[in-house]
Image (tube, rainbow, N blue to C red; front, side, top):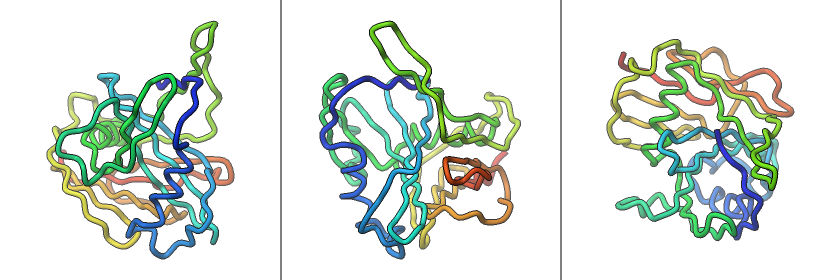
Amino acid sequence: MAVHHPATIVPTKLELLRAWVPHQPWAADADTSALTRLGSYRFDDPDGEVGMETHLLGTADGQVLQVPLTYRGARRAGAGDSLITTMTHTTLGDRWVYDGCHDPVFLTVLVATVLTGGREADLYAATEHGLVLEPSTTHVRGSGNLRVEEVPPLTGPVVRHDGTTTVLDAGVEVVLPRVVTPAGPATGFALRGSWPGQEEPVVLATVEGPP
């Protein structure tokens, strides 16, 4: 599960996304002069160290961008190129925000979710009365049916951008559309998702390769 702590965050997530996304090669064909939040989904880190949240953003020209972020309580060694910014969180302290596509924790959990038929993490609000489940409006589901022990170990990742798509080579090939469209069926295993305004699930990632 993911826990939402009441806090002030500087910069806010939308502020950092509005500053960073327009400079990314996969967003070059979109009008990023105005970005709005359409939804987001989270995954759980089994070790409880890394926050993972993928944002779905609406552009000024009506496109939908997919932007995975990871939040860490300390700098990740050797990952300076994928560091987006640092933020101050009044409950959790300083947080280092990374491009999730370069983060091995995000990649590992994404692949496992796709291959085992998993879904987004439940989000709970931390209140003075304990944890309270928050209603979710964005839902994702993997198409696989493997057991957890059947998920192959990963390497890398080696990240490249092909137009509006990011490809991650980590022993399996993960294809992540950064501009999300209601395209046809995916080949291989897929993660599909829906959010307000997109009630029919669309492909958010595919995994091809072993097993």
